[in-house]
Amino acid sequence: MSPLSACRTHLAAVMVAIPAFLNTWALLPSEAAVAPVAGGATKNNQL
Image 1: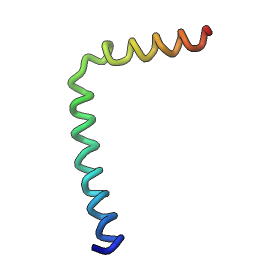
Image 2 (image 1 turned 45 degrees about the horizontal axis):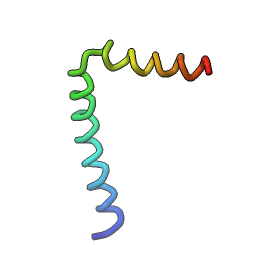
Image 3 (image 1 turned 90 degrees about the vertical axis):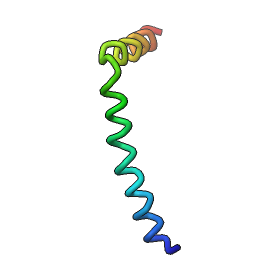
């Protein structure tokens, strides 16, 4: 297997994985996903 064909296979796998990941992320309630991140950022900034 040449490096080029391996790269193409990897890129194809990434192209399939990214939409799947985004779809699962979109299923999460946006506030539940964002609030802990925002809260953690503000706590870190205050320290």
